[in-house]
Every structure is written in structure tokens, then in C-alpha cells.
Image 1 (cartoon, one colour):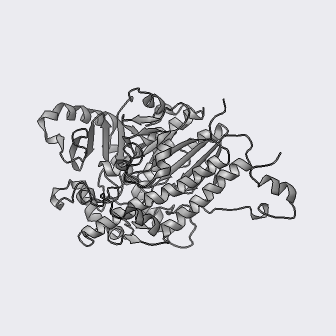
Image 2: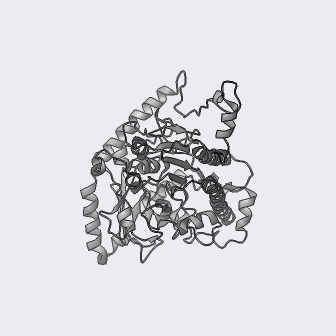
Image 3: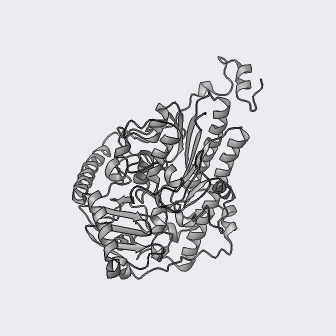
Length: 502
């Protein structure tokens, strides 16, 4: 049986709370709804870390930040880390990346044979946090409240420029794979930056949410002192006092966010349409790197273990996975071993070192072998933060903060910390023991601080003198495209046509 082609559709900062079983009914997302109907839908999927680069490194490697060493958005993704692209490429797959992956460092491919666009974010060490300066706001901090207070309508933005290009090149690549296929299976990873802030949407999508009843957060903003210590740090980092948002601005930000989900749905529909029109079949994966708080509790963006930030959509339409809803908690760390199994690719015996596991048994009703784990050591933190999701319970721990324990079955909005409830003492003890067995937080703290200090020193040096960027530079063999005198023009026209004759 031929191994399946694989199409990965990745978005940025889309909360799984809006995908309880495919897209929520209020979202105008018909293409994703149709995909959901034929997919295994994991409605309790979590990111490895609630920040772009660590989360994406986890998706690709199956390793938490403590295994990948991608601690934050400026930590190098080392070239010696095997990824699912390496495994599938070695197994004979043609591997292509189109769009964002937030690779930091000189290696901008990580197993992909070709990359069709540059990244939207920088590949250098310029966004490195510094735990030696707790509480200090830094000039590169891009998650202030301006994305909320400036929400509204625009036809062209930096983000739209990027995602329009990603969508165009991805759709064309689907046709190229049909026209130029050599019989080998292919992996195409398409990664958008929307619905990530800033919360600005095109009028076409904005108008879809006129009168939407979801424009106010379910959990209103809490007083500053009612937040947990990490949430207060995030508020301070976002300079919330200077950029306090009105109810109208909050509503506008949420409306634009939902509108951009519809924008992404439209672009995904075009790619899936090209796949069908070109006569190709593929396993399709849809996921986000992390979520978005979207004003719940008064918090925005990600960077915490609350559901809005840490939970993500994950849908897989693939051979051997029956369509339906799976409630067992899983992780996007599980994608790498799942793809390796689907592609019959060798992982070189690395499975025991992975933090993820093949999703096929869980999709078939089997129990997960261990709790879902998350880590966070980036912006707004001052020490390693870890979390476990097991059954109905979520546990978070940090040397700098009080423990948290939430019963998500009884309290999905996480309003009551059960760590302070004596009736939950046994559960707390079990989760605390599981975390202690899994993590050496003192060792992680030392590793993060060492990495930060080294990167800050290197960044200061590389900003002095002649600049050599690591950003990916897309290249084209222009002389091999369109009409050229050294090409057989009749053959060229025939090969670039679809359907092809003969």
C-alpha cells in the first residue's frame, strides 16, 4: 500500500477552546468544519509550551523545551535535533515548508528539502529574556496592549502580506506536486501567522461577526491583586496600566480575532481545493502552535498554562484514524511520532527520548501512557514553570509561585484553585510526585540562565560591525522557469499543464 502524502496546516495562536469538536458553531469556518467531519478531533490537545518557538520546536521534535533547549523565542533550534521532516525525508518523502516556523539560528530548514518563504519573525538572539533582571520591561517586548487598543479594520497589514504569500505559494506547490511528481510521497507543511495579534482584520471577514454574541470574555477581567503571581507578571510586561482597554476595544479585538479565523479558513479552503482538483490525496493535519487568552480574566496573548493559552485545536484526517471526537488529553508533541508511524519512517531508536507518543492507540480508545506535560521558561517568567494534565486535573508548579490544581471537569474556566482544598490533598500529592519525578527544576533553571547569558553576549557582539542575518532567503532558479531558450518549450508546456495529456 502506498504511503500517504501528508499535508500539515498550522496556524498561530488559535485557542483550542474555540474548537471543542471542530470549529465552534459561531465561527464562520466552513472549510475547517468539513475537514473536522472526516478527522479524528482531539478536543483536549495541549501545546508543549505556550509560546511560538518552543511550541513549534516541540511539534517538530517531539521534545519539551528541556529536551530541545528551545527555551524561548530567541533560543537556537540546534541542527543536531532530529525532526519529523528528517525522518520522513530519510524514508523517501519529498519535504517542503511554506510559511512560519520560528526557527532561530543558522539552520533554517531542519530536515525540509525546500522552503518557499522566509519567516515572519527574526532568526537571531535579539528577543532573549534575562532572568537576572526580574520585572524589567525590555524594549523588544512586542506583546503590549497596543494590539488590543489598536484593534480594528484594515485591508493590508504586515501579517496579511505574509499569509497571502504563504497561501499563494502553498496552493501553487500543491499543483507542482501533481505536475512534477516522481512517484515519491510528499510532506507539505503550510504554516500561517494568523490569527495571531495584532487584532486587525479585512472588512470582508470583519463583517461576518456583526452582532456576534461572543465579543465579551466569558470570565471578566480580575482585579490585579486577584491574579496569580505569574499572571501579574504578564500584565506588568504588557504594561496594562498604560494601555488599559475599554469594553469596546476588547470587543473589537475579539471580533478581529474571529474574523482572522475566517480568513485562515478561506485560505485553507483554497489549498484543500487545489489538492482535490489536482487529483491528489493526502493525510491532513490541522493544528495551532499555542492558544490565545483573548481577554479572559483580563489576560491576553499566551505565555500561561490557562486553557485559553495552552489548549490548541488538533485534527487529523489520515488512514487508520477513525473520524470522531477524542476526549483523552494529548499533546502536539505527539505529532512527530504519529507522523513517523504513518509514514513508516524510522526514528532511529529515539522514541524513548521523546516526550510525545503515537496518537493512533489513543485515537482507538487506549489510555495514554503518561500525563500530558508542558513547560514555560520565557517572557514573563522568572523561574521554570511546569504543568501536567491528567484526566480531569491540571497541575502547575514553579519554584517562584504557589502551586495550582484545577478540576477542569467541574471548573473549565479555572476559577477555583483546588491546591488549597483539603478534599483534593491526595490528588495534589499524586500530581506533585509525578512532577518531581519528571523534572529537576534546579537543573533546568541553571541551564536556562546559562543559555540566556551566552545568547545575550553573542547578540551584543553580532549587533556590532558587519551584519550577517540568519533569516532564510528564498531563492528561485529563475532561468529554469517559464520560457527559456535552453528548454524544450513543447515539453515544458506539456509538463506544466493540468490535466496532463498522454
